[in-house]
Length: 353
Image (cartoon, rainbow, N blue to C red):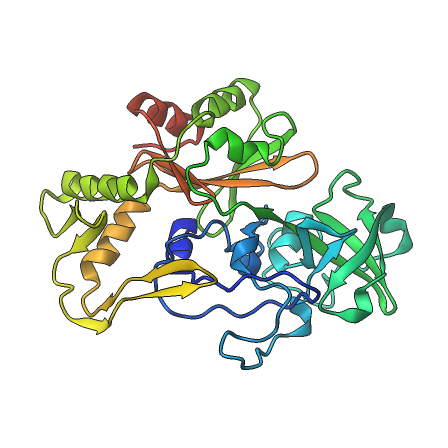
């Protein structure tokens, strides 16, 4: 499942921020969320870790119905020095791989490949744990990892039981109509660029872009773009379908701005609208026949790649590039590319037509 598919399937989690940091499990509904940015980071803690604060109830362990939510202690995150822009969570397996703590070909943690932290791994102090769901962590000292002395994205927490790795996740803004350069400026990009990694849907690194001319060309393409909106993206998806298959098994509906699929007339679950904290959430109906939808998804995801741009402090942003629709996505903002830009970007990203 790629970034776009995951975003399409996420449900909004009610946001409040007070004094505890346990995360609610997400629902399994396939409803479409009218607004959501990179909330996926909370569940997957992706390589560059970006998610939207408004989509997570970081400091509440009860559901909207008042029922207690069962959460594993390992999900507890913390704020460092009262900085509410970054939350730190216990390190995921993907981040074990990213930071070289396990072999690249490892498929899981074992007693043999688990990194043993020693005092020599402690870098400069970063501060102390402030707000956290695990009360025992509050007040604990936090250090840079000496292997990555300039990174704020990974740290070592000194607890009463020993040392533990945590990785930071940046709160991306949940705003539409953001220019692409504004999105990148959150991470001081391109000024603070450290590396650019190209990954596939499974977050496997395909290669890195190191050539200065290619880096310059890439930023020239993606900077100063305006959000085209979801409706225009749907129109482009429908056009791509017709170009490929020359039929109207799916089409763009001007009245609603959505894609209509043929043969999805038997509704399994009715769609509905919900208001959460004053925010309107629209859930699409679920249909019996999804063959056309599945076929369309395969078309739209063809040759998709993720452009992971990492800054000098270890944080960064993942851009989802879709050659089929001639668009790229940052924080749920969609940006259009010209035909020449697509050709140039395909060359840089080694995508062959």
